[in-house]
Length: 144
Length: 383
Image (tube, rainbow over all chains, first blue to last red; front, side):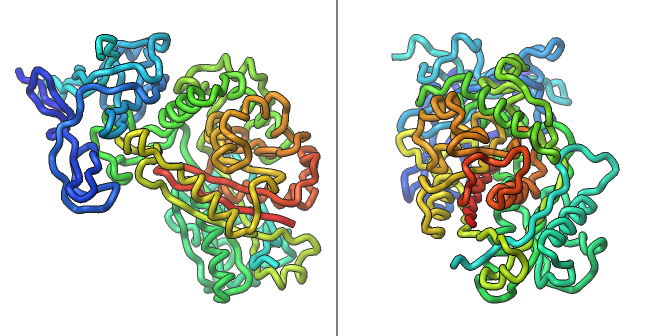
């Protein structure tokens, strides 16, 4: 069974090396995410599709120390006992900063400025029994 | 002389009041403000009401009297009360009316605020992934700020301890037990580096102010407090803000809306930041107070460690901050929060704040609101 992305048009899928699908404003060259009508920088109506860089750096991070209420739908990690996970702001140099779940890390290993790369992660099983995947970023010590 | 004066303030305590509707709390706050001004509801030529949960704040007239006046309802996120005050100020300055009531109320359930992400221009997946949370934004903003300016965990704890201490002196506060920095640091980690006791809680309450054209203020009170300015600003592209899936790269970062609102408010008031003697700042969490001290021009980035360690922002310091306990001790009924700040500034400037009277006899102060999705309101008042 093919797994489904959490939202169509969010990242290239299926793909061995998926990329987030952003936008580029033809009027002011701003790079945006996700791809949707309207440039948040200059207000131009239509943006061009643009795949975002798969690597970047960690601009900031925090722990998620409680299970979010709706509209959260994730089924990952451990609910009993609850295990915190991590989220961060990822800087894609020359493009933008975006918010993401972080995987493959602990509070002690996260460092602002550390290299990170895009991955996908199992997110939940939907009502039809399909595996739903979403994007995340993970530390990437090999990045140069 | 400034254009607008505050001649009466009233507050319904903040906290939990099972069975008492927000509109009843609002009616109590309105009556208290009117009594403080020596006036009645029938004297009001207009009113502005703010709330997040109550669809029609003007329905308070069912308890105050249906007098037929212009009554405008306002919702503008955590800046609701500041926006209501701005509208009242504009109504007076335009000459449309000369005396009116500003009223804020709310009654929130327990737990972090939530909403439909699409109503905040965020895609559904952003909420499904657990990213549509204000608390994690505040955690990430202060974590980055600590990295950039060397702010310590101890300083975070000192902010919360100060606000609980101030709240213990305030009979209207929700949290009235003093907590030590050790207790605060040792409480459950909610969103690193912010622990449970570093956060405010959504709760219930109401607050009100009677405002009038400044030249007539002394007909009603011997001690008017003047509203020198009030400014509302929203986020610009490139600021790092609440409920924002993506923004410009850090090389194109621009100041937060608090910085813009503060600059506009100081300019309109003809006041410099170093003239401020008391401040009520949006302390959604301990980190927010630290950041907002700098964003409001009250210190330089990184000076907060020393200012908190020396007690500079405590009741006996040269620049008391959140003298009634702030949001941390009072909680946040959104529509009322900014009018609670105004109530506290008026009490302090009158010298009538009782056990929590600031030692520096403040004559000029600032009130600051900030919240989702990146909106700020800043008011400056003076004797």
